[in-house]
Image 1 (tube, rainbow, N blue to C red):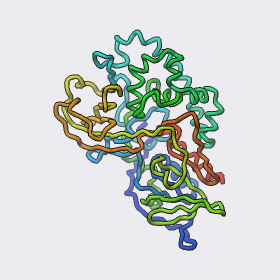
Image 2 (cartoon, one colour):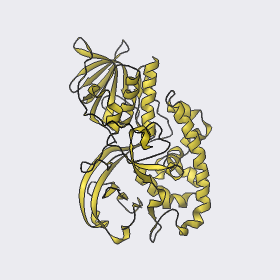
Image 3 (cartoon, helix red, strand yellow):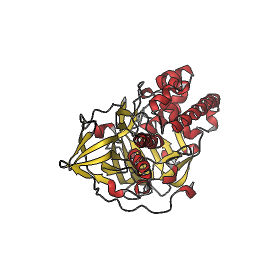
Image 4 (cartoon, rainbow, N blue to C red):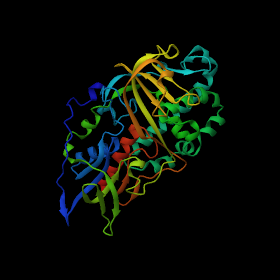
Length: 404
């Protein structure tokens, strides 16, 4: 994996672009809104094909945000699995992500899924894993096609993926007699990954959360990822905020920002719903979760000590996870800005804290299309919020523009 990572360090991002000007407005072939994983993936593909574009974004990197005190500690995305074929060359692996490192509360104490005390659940766990392998196989076929076709079309045309999309996780768990497994392991895992519970998602998304059970996974350093993706076109990134997108009778789009006005043949919206909704009427995901990420150094209380990861149950905690990092300190995901850390530590220091207004988009029974209009594409994670698929949505938008 390390051999696939480009060795050259990223250069400092610069601002500036020189599109042509018509009637005082700057004309450009494509405007990409958002410089997170999907926007940069889109730009990277367009640049490789010699196409003209700019990126307009309030910040750079999106969820690829590192702690201000340690760049190897991710305050947003932290781990990936070995099926992240597109993203893998742009990350640095820190260490393996192991399911056995995470402890769940059984009502009396914390133990891993593989504890001998859980042997009574093993037949159900095995059955779940079989279903998970089938889902993973169909998902990866969909991913291969998703660079050229909309996710919506591919899911609708796959019987298993379509079934899981329209089946609530609650009904799936009931049909398979997995409710107890879900309460002990599923709901805490859902809280840790998407800051919600199984009641808030469909079966497709629920299965999506557990792929690390069957695939090798890695804790990664994303601090260089944005720079590696954009190192050849950093002058095309403009730090600005889009306030209005309007389609003209000519079929072109006017993009109004705080500092500029652009005319574009194509628009790629690669920003979260809450960041773009005032500028354009984008489809709204069924549920948007928020989360606070804390980076804490301290001495855990005995109950939580000497365990790499403590997965906390959302029924009884405002925190979702205590996660020891290789370079020291703990990452904590929490519902609140004033988390009572004394519940978990004898003493502590908050090294960093970030609020994610959009923690995750959660899908509903409807599948959001990626082609909103002629020349207008939706990237990012409006259907499901994992970095590989956000990357692929950017590639889809770029490929549609290249075809035309």
